[in-house]
Length: 517
Image (cartoon, rainbow, N blue to C red):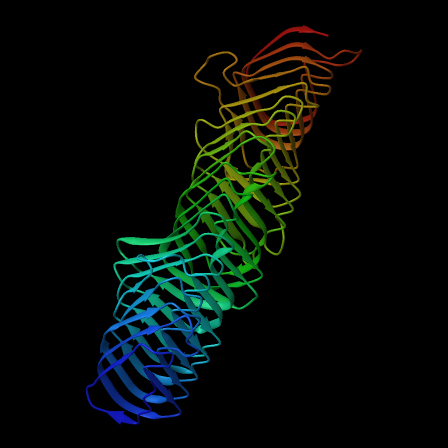
């Protein structure tokens, strides 16, 4: 059944066949309907409500639309109009979209009824689809609950100029497989639901943003994935001035938790979450060529053969800041920062505490540019044959790099600082307890290797059985060694407990040298 109208009074339309309840194309509208009810059946080749290339105003008061076929509840394309619908939209094993918005050039599109997929099996195709809309807005004022299996629940393509807002009490977009939300070529989306505001995927990726364009996401929706891909994956896009603001972003048993590359523009802010059980040699948070400010307030816990944090090749046209404010517990391959002096450079802040225990791999490595700060009172770094802390050709920032303890057993060195700028490097220990700052032992080279380093303060550290000098340095400014014990340093002639050339500034502390090798 099809109804073609230019103007109509209040009416009720019911369709249970294979046709549309309402089909309009190329009409200047001033029309309203009390109710439209219908079922988009498995055999249907038509959408229940189809409006194309039209202008004016169309309102639908309510009714129920059930989608079980390959078409849509609403198919709106090529319009510039004011459209409103209060229908309840439900899906029962559908293979089509619940809503298709394509090529609209302007107007407002408001849905005040719920989109509800909770009473049926998963949708085998997609939930909400937006493509090539160049103006206007779409708003959902009621609950949206979408479940899909083989396609995104929310699929947005080249849609930056058409704003989408979820304003109901609950928004839940859930997928089992592939990915849940896909944005390609730009989008502006506000997730403003107040009770449930969540994107989930039990076997695939959560939010995938790629293909260029400008993307703005606000409202703080939570994203959670498990046993699949990244909770958030962004590649080759510009963040809009409104930024990307997410709530808790969490991932478990996935190769990546958050993966971002070649992204510039506005801020990316993630309030919290938990990334755990990283698999397959993956990385908890992997940032490459990032020019935007970024912050993640969640925790990261990773096992052997995986990495908690990697930041590479980053820096904004104005210096950008990358902050991890949640606790990081790394039993794998440590924190890796490299080549972060692109453009105006990046500053990486770790403020939530780090516990690093990495065996034969360096626990903390910062190389080749950028600025780094590690703050807090309980940071620890332990390795065996990997140099525990290496900061080389990277500036230590004004907040400094502070560890409570640093330990190594069998590495080339325990701590290496080279060309680190004026920022302070500190090992505190606990109070005045000997050895509480860690033990560096059985190194093949010097226990501490310092080159063009400033403001180095080491307390309560034991250095023993080193293959070269206990502490070796060239051009060191302001050095404090408090309650440091060096025992059996060196294994050859002219190897000493401390050997520093060009020691400048203030030298202080209390040092014990027990014996020399």
